Every structure is written in structure tokens, then in C-alpha cells.
Length: 174
Image 1 (cartoon, rainbow, N blue to C red):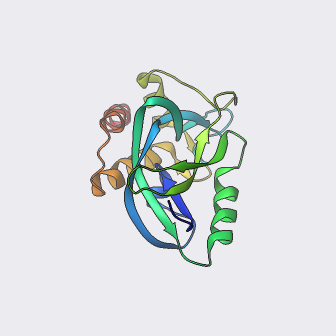
Image 2: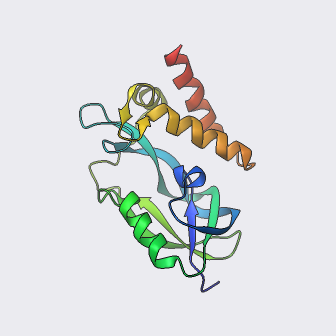
């Protein structure tokens, strides 16, 4: 393990990090899965029409492929402040340190708190409906989904579940 600050991104951080990056590599995190299990009434929806955003949901037999970002040397405090301002807008996310298995580093990441009211598990059809129609302060929820899928594909990290969801959202938009 290393002393430098690493951040694990699995959703929008992949395509929009909010800190200075020295290096990035694809990464694997065991025991967690990427899931649209967080209602968004800040960035990608409203309280009246919540959207959905990705979160890491604990799943002992699963793993999540994403990106490990090495924070630029000397920028660790600024990076952590920017991450906390962005990710901890509510207390639905919990900041934790996780051991990545590839590369073998400890990384900061944000996981969903299952006890929080924004935590939600819903069938894919309901997810598609919410994502197709929600818009928040950072734009349409569908743009978040489509950007995440495209960037994962570009990194060689295809996610069949997200592709299926994106297909269902596109059907609703046509």
C-alpha cells in the first residue's frame, strides 16, 4: 500500500474529477457494486421528481471496476475539500478508505448509507422512468447515465447493466 492520496471513482468522478490528477489507472474494488441506488434531489432531480445517481452499494461477492486517481502531490487537502463539498451535499454518502486490489493502493471513495432516506433499490423499469424524466441543477439525469456509460466504454470497462438501463431510457425518450 502507499502513502499518497488516491481516489476511487465509479460514476461521474470518472469523467469529471473535481481535483488535480497526477495519474489515473483503471481499478478494481472488491465487495462493492456500482448501482443507481441513490435518489437525487440535488444534482440530477428535485424533491418532487427525484432522479437517480450511482453509488457504491455493499455486496460481499461483487466487485466494481472504475478509476483510481492519484491526486497531484501537494493538492491532497484541496482535493479532499472539493470532494467533500461535492459528494457530501447530504449525508447519504459516507466517505471511507478502501483497499483497491488492482492497483494495490488505499483510496478514498464514497459509498451509500443504506439507512439514509435517499437510498433506494428499485426495478430497472422504474429506474429508467426516473432517469428519463428527471432534471436537477447539473442537468438531465439521462446525461449523467449516458456520460458514465460512454466513459466506462472508452476506458475498456463495459457495464452490461448500465448499457441495458441506457437502452431503456433511450426507448422512453423516443
